Image 1: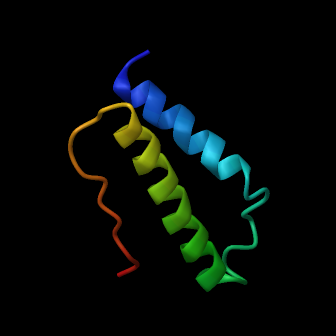
Image 2 (image 1 turned 45 degrees about the vertical axis):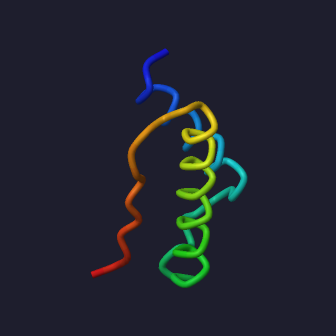
Length: 61
């Protein structure tokens, strides 16, 4: 499994904990907070495997 495959799998696993995100337009603040939590979760897993580099989190706008 390549690094990107593992990153994709980690992201899917982290996202699955949030269920249906179809209401993101009704709750934009909650959605952004969840997206940041997912990003940090994925970054922590990649770091634990010895990955080097940074995961950039870009806000809206």
